[in-house]
Structure formats: structure tokens, C-alpha cells
Length: 107
Image (cartoon, rainbow, N blue to C red; front, side, top):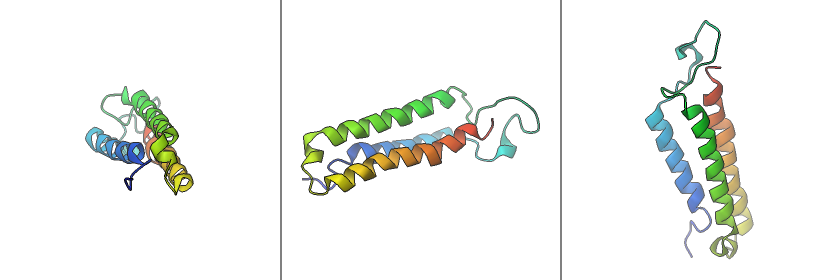
């Protein structure tokens, strides 16, 4: 049994999210927003379609983690409860604390 049994979707998704955010290079400081000092909404990304795509990717990542936890290899692990909780918490915390602030920084 692999040490990452039941954690593959979580691990790969987390690395993929970090690489995607590194590639997209979002605005993290409100003063760098194109609408700084004015009214209106702007995007933290060069392509504003990522304001919708990124939350959808987080949801897809969470669904992939939940599906992986339902598969037999993940359920056979002796630490299945702790792994399942950790695997589900990582996408939730990454989405709420890591991605969500990026989506509202320029609004």
C-alpha cells in the first residue's frame, strides 16, 4: 500500500493549484488593482475569466478528493479517517483562505 493512498487527488491538486497561481501571477495588493481609487470591479488576473474558472477548479478538485476517498484503496488504509479528513480539509482551506481572497482583492 502506498503512503499516498487516498491522498493522490489532494496532493496533485494542491501542486497543480500552486503551479497555476504561479503562472497566473494574480494581483495580491489592492493598490495594484486597475480600479484603485475608483469605482467598479476589476480582476486580479490579466484574463478576467479566471475569476470564474478558479472557483470551478477548486470545486472540481474537492469532488475529485471526495471520489478518491470513496474508492476501495483509500478505505482499506488503517488511518482512513484521519486521511479522509485531511484530504478534504486541504482543498476547503486552500479555496477559502488561499484563492477566495485573490478573487475579491480588486472588488
